[in-house]
Length: 97
Image 1 (cartoon, rainbow, N blue to C red):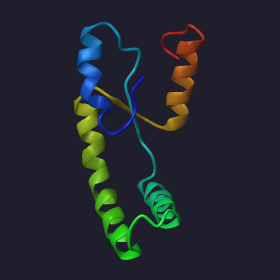
Image 2 (image 1 turned 90 degrees about the vertical axis):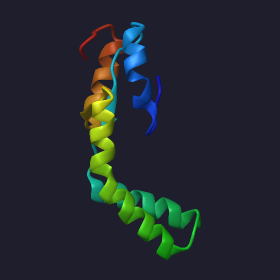
Image 3 (image 1 turned 180 degrees about the horizontal axis):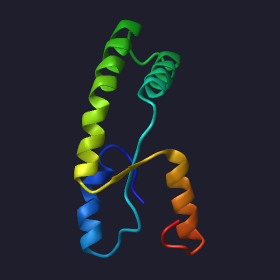
């Protein structure tokens, strides 16, 4: 299992080696992601609030391109609930969720 923004980088190689059970890029509401990230970063006092907001807006705008790139690398866009259902199916021995 791999997770993170760069996980899609290994999808094709895992598929080639027969190691890929599934590859997903989480599709989440962008506004909710922005607010969740901002709240986390403000609570951790990572940087000045103005910088965090500017960075958050930039990430909000870039998110569709990031998702398209991950899909281009072989990941399937899906909501978290769907990914969890599919992984649970794999663990239960049902290859398609």
